[in-house]
Image (cartoon, rainbow, N blue to C red):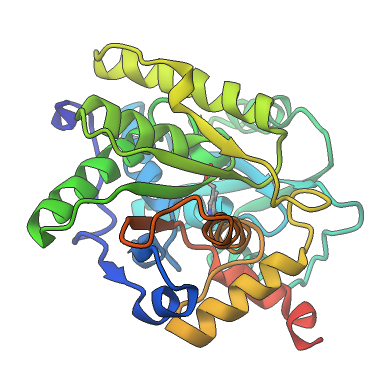
Length: 331
Ligand SMILES: *Cc1c(COP(=O)(O)O)cnc(C)c1O
């Protein structure tokens, strides 16, 4: 795959590290656990949206946009990073925030919400849970267009065939690092949310014929729905990249670690976030990577991986939102 043919901005001037989690590996008694530190990507606070935004912002700039519009939940990492990318490029940014949990929006809340303010969002538009987010963003775009602005809409999570190229690039990066380190990974574990990360990594590995299975841990949708959503984006990516489509069987999703729903706290998440902080001094997040780590640890306990196998956990970031959840960790 030749990714160089797609326009790209650069927000991370290095490969993110892959480290072995020695203490966690010893504590669990195997498999050999590694982590890809995408929490250390560029832009404000790092995290997976930075990779997607490299391709999305390049597209926006090529179309002459002066204002970026995107959407997310009230503590959205994606909104923070899209705003940060807009600031970096000297563009304005509007955020449409969905109150997925009733009454969860507080104007002066901490975490990412505080950063929206600090980074100078032009305006936030708060809408009720279940709203048609694309329609809401188009409404904002129409208003701004009427004022003479040139808008560009980044879809939720940056997960379309442009943004997901960032994770195709990440798959290539992992393979190159793996080659240089002399370590061949047997499994890669990723969070499966708006699907850009999962679809991008899987399509990238398939496109390179790497045959490393990808395990997606869901954080909001039922397994069947999520599997289809991931697969749909994989197919679009294959077209974009001009590579053959692969079977839907390659898409593996677990939906056992969601708890009551998106962003709702689970015991497993609290335990996983606390364990990784205490064993490895690495901060996970309550909404995505904490639940994904809970899932991976549970699969380890169930004997899904062999002791000597090498498992790579993709750390997609999110720790700024931890500070909006501190109460749950004091108990
Ligand atoms: C958005 C996000 C994810 C999920 O990635 P998708 O590409 O939306 O599936 C995982 N972790 C963090 C920290 C995120 O912000």
